[in-house]
Structures are given as structure tokens and as C-alpha cells.
Length: 513
Image (tube, rainbow, N blue to C red; front, side, top):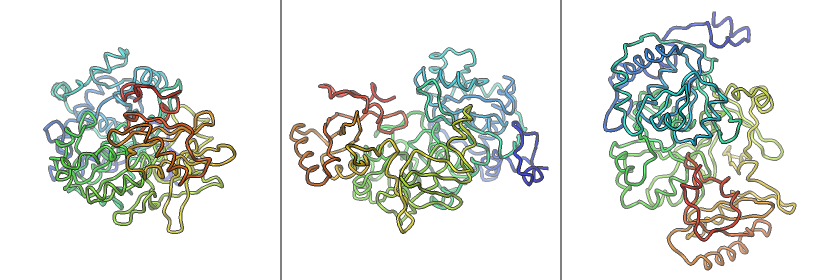
């Protein structure tokens, strides 16, 4: 019957009445097929959980969800840290055909309220702190903030539900949120078919059941969800989970588990360059260091190879695609390039360099926003906000978002090109260029303590020698540290809204939203 529907060019209704064998379900492909090896799936909080354990725990949580009258097609929100609670809850949703909306457990109250009002979920699964902060009538506390004991004790009281639902592959599976700080958060809906795509781990990472994975990027992002759950579970590998983004000290505990694949956004690699003495030996087990989610600058790439002896593997993906679709290949990296297009994905550029793309993991729709979906997604192509170009060897270069390529006094300026050039100065640790009311500003953090006025003079002298006149910043603002978003990226929006340098530079706590 399913083949008849597909041949007719139709998509099943939501929720689908069509059922396939449980062996065709996403849950089976992620969990059940790895049962026989009793292989460790998750390392977390000094405990190891096998794939068989995950099946057992998930069946209990499905029973719990059914007791809350949650059924196939319902939407629930997961506001949970990277933990066994997240893994089990997510898998239970996949197992039952429930749509999982994934939000940051550290999101500010207004952001969570906007998302809840927008989605109207049946229930919100959260930690103690989030439950207390929101006090929403649909909030369910299923975990403490720093321990899994509450969650595991909750499961002990449940019976098991052995049913595995196999929704049609076109039915919605998850909602990822790219923004929730306005009154209209953007929800990216992905179907079950999207979560089954594994081109990147199969062809680029060459992932196998011998791999142990650690990702700095959290599972409420598409990059983190793939790294820590979907990719390793597809191949029977193991994932290391920590509730909070580790600092240099707690990272040592992670590395003692000997990860073979390591994922982070480029600013994290910048920070780790300062810890060679304590991390170099511990990094010896890692066969690939993967970077995505932000621009990888030339000097970060070169310094990482010089200090740790291995290259960073740059790749590119978007929340709408939900899967990296441009990547360098190990041993064939090209500096400043995001790599080459993966099989089954397509790319095209308009006259201004704006990128459109399509592929097997492209999202279904913007949740509750048919107008934007129709505007941006046409005939299977998504028109992105990124600009770039492809060289004669097929390497793709992302020059920035449309907002980071702007015209000043009739001349085009690429903030990435200017930033990349200025980072040749050894005393510059980080630099972000913003266009504020037609005035180019450079926000800079330094390696070590320096005379700030002397640094500014050196920067201006370098600019005069190496940049075009319209590319030279009119204002240079030196900060002790760059503001970061909760995803580990530099918060450009915060910098753009800064009116003037202060005597006491703003801290991450004040700016890191």
C-alpha cells in the first residue's frame, strides 16, 4: 500500500495510517539492530549504557508517556541537557511517532515562553530548574539538573511498552528551533526520512562501531544531534555525553574515555589552543577533529595543526538541511574552504553568490509558517541567507551570510575576508567586524595583556598596508573576552548593538544570550 501511495506522488496524512514492519522503523535502525553485541551506546556520569539498556529504558518511558495520554502525532518539547534523560526521551518519541520539539534547557524564560505559546505542546519534559522557572501547567519535571538518579528512579516504577510504531517516512519527527527571542520563533520541521540520512558519517568520517564520539555542540542543535546521537547510533558507535559544556579541566575527564571523533565550533578550537601542555597527550586518541557552525579562520587551522599535529576538518550544514552536506575529506583539506559537495546533495549560486541547495535531508516546513515555507522553499530548493562560490576543483567557499557582506560607500565588503586578514597579526585572538549605521567597527580580543593603544596603532598600520581603503575599520574596540551565544558562537548581534567601548568590557554572562 505504501508503494502505491508513493507512486501516485502523494504523501500520507499526519499522523499516517500506513504501517510498515518494525524493522523499517527509525528506532529499529538506531537501537534494535545493535542488540546482539551488547555494545556501549552512551558514556555519561561515570556510567555506561548499552544499546540493550537503551531499548529497556525507552520501553519504560513509552509506558510513562502513554500514561500521560501522549500518542502518535502529538507534539512534546524536550528542554533537557545532553544526558541519558535526553537520549531516552528522544528515542521514546521516535519509537511512538511523537513529534519532539528540541529546545535549549538554558534558554531564557521569555524565549521558552515564546516557543511554548507558538507550538502549544501537549507536554514539556524538563529539569527541575526549568520547571520551577516557568511553572507552566504542561511542564513535567523528569530530571534533576546535575544527576540522572531522579529520572532512573522514575523509570523503575514503570512497566514496559514493547510496541514500536513505524510512521511513514514523510511524517514529522522533530522540530529544531533557530530562534526564540522574538514573538515568532522559527521552528524547522524534519521528517523521519531526514533523520535516516548518513552520508556524512559514512563517507567522510568513515564511522564504525569502534568509534567513540564527543561533541561540544549540544543536541538541541542539528550539528550536535547528529554528532552525539543519530550518527553514532546508526553505526553502533559510542557517544560521550556531559550535561554542561566542559571547561579545560572537565574536558580532561571526557578525554580519558579516549574519543576517536571530536566535534566543536571553531571558537572552541581557538580556546583549546591555549591548553597544549595539558591536552596534547589526551588528544592522541582522536583521529578526526571536525569543525562546523562558524567560520574557521586560517590561523586557527594552521595553529591547530602546528600545535596538535592534526588538521581540523571543516564542514558545512544548516538547520534546514539537518545534515552536513559540504565537507573537506580527511587528507584533502583546503584552507578557508568548507569542502566539496556530498553525494545526493545539490548546490547552486545566483549572480550575487547567494546559495540555494537541496538534498535528501531537506526540512519539511517552517512550523506554523506556510508563507515563509513557500517563499524560501521552491521545487525542493531552499534559498539560504549565505553567500559563497565554488572553485575549479569543486571546493565551496562560504564568504558569509548576506548580512555579513555589505556595501559601504558604494563598495562591497566581506567581513570574513577582512577578519581573516587581520588574524594574521599574532597578538589578535579573536576579531569580529560589524557594520553599524554605515560605519565599520572591529571588536577584538587579544592573546595576553598588551598596551591597547599601541595595539590599535599596529592594527591601523597593518590595515593601511594590506586592506583597501573602504575595508579599514573606523573604530577598533578591544574587549577582554568575546560574548558567546549558548551554542558557543560569537554573538555578533550583541556586538552590533554595542554603542561604544566601555571602561569595563562586558562579560559573557551579560552578553551570552
